[in-house]
Image (cartoon, rainbow, N blue to C red):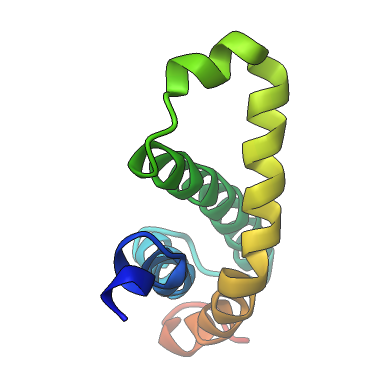
Amino acid sequence: MSDAFSSGLLLPAICLAALGWTVPRMLALWWPEGVKWLMFLALVSTLVMALAGAVVFVVIYAAQGVSLADLWATGGLSVTIHFMKLSIVSALLWGPLMILSLAGVPKNWVKEVW
């Protein structure tokens, strides 16, 4: 069971799901109110989570013993595309939680009406 947490994908999946909830809420603390701003918040949160997903997979590869220098030697752009594809697939984990988190942001608005 501990192998699933240490070298498996269970712990990173839980972390990505938690980030999917937390990132929009943290950004919303400083974000202006309004429907247009909410849509922009969704876009920025998605970009931040895509980058976070790619970083998580880079860390997983490094933890598994894959040398990042060897990866970059094979071709920088192809490696970047590979990690971005993995990040897009990880959106299945954090995407629904991010949508739910964004849906709860307007309840804290003071100036704008939803």
